[in-house]
Structure formats: structure tokens, C-alpha cells
Length: 399
Image (cartoon, rainbow, N blue to C red; front, side, top):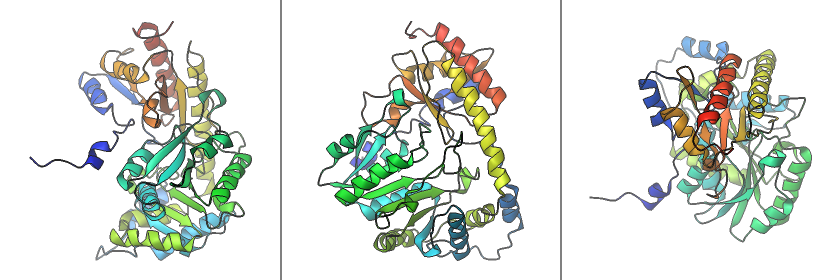
């Protein structure tokens, strides 16, 4: 029988979806399962985007330009200018989700065997994209005790080798919700300029910052014009995860021209999703104001609730809609499985994402899990009580 590739074998399983079979079995057993494992918001997609698809009259569903509709790129340029980010439409490639933007980045900026430094914990699919591209992830550890702040400069310096091609951050962070300060970004700028590296910033949660905190983009930083690469997406910003539209932004013309070869190889982004995305750019600011207010309330309910449980610690995130908590258990993964397979509270249980899958070092994050506050406040309060009662009877709870 033919064998599969070593690369395919090395592809990591998703910690976000790993426990889906347990959740499906729990539902077949009649349990109500609350899904806190994945960042699928229940916020409605803007009506203007939905109407654009319904009203589209396209006799021939043809390919678009490989870089995406010119009108969509112009709309994105106006969006960035509205954020005081001087980005032209020629500096944007529309992609099939932020995931493809990251794959194009790895393919364009790095050769097989090259290295990218990432503060951990990090979005688990970075591992998958790196493996698919033959790129080695070199982690630098952030700590839950200080809310996952940027690791010290010395940790980055120690991780740099002749194979290092860039540093990748998510800001605000997935899975931590940490929002980097301008001072932290300036530290990263100094490192990449000193060692002539790319600074790749996944900024898909840019709109979701809380408590008066401000998001700073690497696109606005002096001196990074040839070093900064931004991965962006419509998925979370407009609650359009299924549309699969993102973009790649850079002022480095050689990098963009190289990425364009990958874009041409896959021909074009999906047409209907581009139509919806272009319309979504017209969404009023009031939409984001309302969504942010909702997420702040949800965050407070989840984080304050978790911290009210004996032995649980959860730093309060400043952005995105995720939180990482540590639990008084030896294995958060086993606890998460047990919640689905052996426990319910009044016929209800929940699914969370074990955080070990968000770390590159296997010994880290074993007692942690990521929870997405993408459910309404009532459901989140029920989830807190489920966890509280579960830890009281779970055989592996550390007293």
C-alpha cells in the first residue's frame, strides 16, 4: 500500500477541534454542549453583507483578479486609511482567509528549513502552516502569571540563528487575548531591524480592544516599511468566518510580487465571498461599538467567574475574544475529555480547547485551556457553574 508523506504525518492535530468526537457523542447521549472551544462568534453578520450576496446578479461566475477585486482592494485601502495606516490598494493581496495569507507569507519569505520565532502560546494553526511550508517554529515562552506579556528581548536574541527569517505575533492575541503595547512593538522593531528580519503581525482582531486600550499596527511604525507584513481577515471582524476572505498587506514590493506568484497559482479568491466582504466594509462604526460592548460584558462574566472558582486563575485579556485559564488538574486535556464523556450538570456540559496544543514545547500548558467568550452572557454564566461543579467531583482535581 502506498504510504503518506512525512510532512502529512508531521501535521499537528487541531486542539480546537480535537475533542469534537467526544462532543458529538455527548450530544447523541442527550447532553446540551456549550462550545467554548472555537472562535465562532454568535454575533450576526452585518446585514449589508448578507444583502449584497442576495442581490448579486452574476450571469457567469468567473475568476477575479488573482489579487482580488480592484474595488475590494480599494475599499480595504480606505479602511486602513481610516485607521491612520497609509496603505494603497497595490499593497494588498486578497486571500482565501487569513490562513492563506499566512501560507503565502511563509512561502514568500522563507525557504524550507528556515525558522520563524513565535511567542507561545500561539494560534495552533501556525504550527500547521509552518509544517506545510517546511518552516521550523522556534518558540519563546510567555507566562500566564503576567498575562502573557511579550517575553524579554534576551529570549528573542537567544532564539535567533542564521536560519531565522522572521518573528510572528498575533495582536491582539489568539489564544491569550493579550494586546501588545507600543513599547513592546518598539522592542520587536529594534530586534528585526538589528537582524534584518521580517515582522509578521496577525492583526485579525484589531477591532476588538477593551478598557480604553489602543491597538498599534506594525504598519504604522517608522523604519519597518520593508520588514512589516500584516495578515488580516474579515472572519472575526464582521462575524463572517465562513466567507473565507482575508488579505496580505506589505509595503515591501519584492515580497508582494513573490506572494503574487502564489496567488496566481490558486487563480483567485472566491467571488461571492469578495462581494460580501466589499459590502461589509460599509458597516457603520456603531456595529463595532455594540459588538465591543457585548464582548466586554462577556469577558467580564467569563474571567471573573473563572477566578471565583477555587484553584482557577485567568488573566483578564485586553483584546480579541479568548482567555487562557489554568486549572487545578494535572491534565486539562483529560479534564476537557472527561467533561464531555463522563460529566454533566443538569444535562449540560461544555467543550474547551486544551492549551497544550497552543504551545510548541510539549511540557507547557498542560494545566491550561483556552475558552472563547463567543456565547451570550446567560450561557457563559451556566458554563461557569458547570466548571465549578465539575472540579468538585473530577477525580483529578488537585486539592
